[in-house]
Length: 176
Length: 293
Image 1 (cartoon, rainbow over the protein chains, first blue to last red):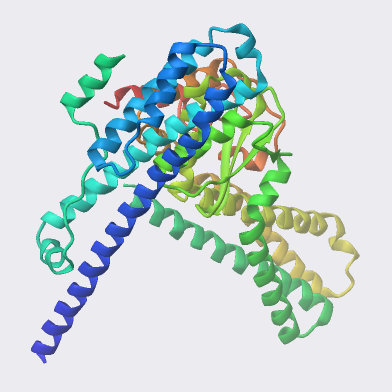
Image 2 (image 1 turned 180 degrees about the vertical axis):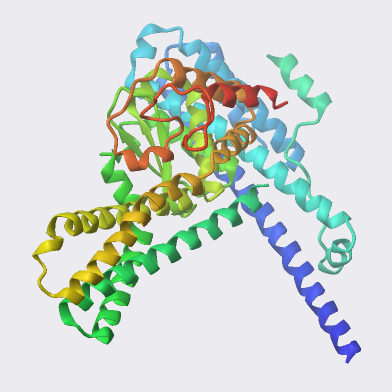
């Protein structure tokens, strides 16, 4: 009798751990797709910005276009994070300079684009914050006992944060 | 802390629904017993009526509250910045996008309603949109999203609709008991009506106060703190609350929905938190926010 109870408890524990880890993994994937969606959205919006600012802020406009064109087609997480940061800086720079032209500032298309793009930048930042929190949760679950045993069986590996390393971050800032 | 308050809110909501169910069943039972003089028919009518009204108010309470306060949908075309801000905060909070409404009034206020994060509504006043900057607005929106996440919206919405319903019924009954009691020639029925009337006379204020007790004031402090967790910028919410306190004006709203709002929309300049105030003092809230690191 006592053995049956012990076996039942062990089975329940296994089921629980399995579901727990799978759930965390899915949550990370969802959080990642949020970032991905917003990055795509931004790359859809940027050509419009480049178009509407034609004739203004030539230097910032061309830099942004160049940065977007030079982007890596198959980046690692680190590269993508760095690239994202770089594009963000350039978008903000262009928006800031464009704002100083009164006729652009009065342009309805530009105004809406500005709200959308600033919003997308915010969304990327929030999505990154959410993703990193989720990954942190997942990573600690993978390392802690007893869920680490289940993680080994499932071959779950530690996930990378979507973050720019401190040294590389400085590098990006120097460029501006 | 949030998970605990979610459970608490669900339990309290269940409690209110149960009370509502019993009250409406008894009420309709006695009423139809007077008419049909058959306990089985009366019980059947009472039960089916309360089941229908409980379901109807559970699924439609958010719409009732929105129409009580005359809110209209905030389209992306008309309110682009507001929509974009809400979208980004939802990503930060990990919540599905709630429906967005506005109320056309110069007062500064906002509320959230609905029954769960999948069926939630955030509503802000146009005065709020005119007076607050982007970061302040984000603070207020994040506060409302926290109410959604904590299931505060479920409890307060259900409480308002169901308790409001019961209070109205009780009022009608006590009035008809006081004014129309003598007309009844049937002694037995009249006696019954007197007893039911007295019961409701006692119950009605209890129900109304239950509403205030059920919705704890701590929910506002908790939502303020969770809002900062979402935006990671407490200054926005602090200066928003300051504006809401100093530049506000009373709103023309349905009084029953008062407790839903981020700051008291009726505003009777009370300085201390008393047992019956629906909102914590704004200065206290600002102070607690400033204490967060």
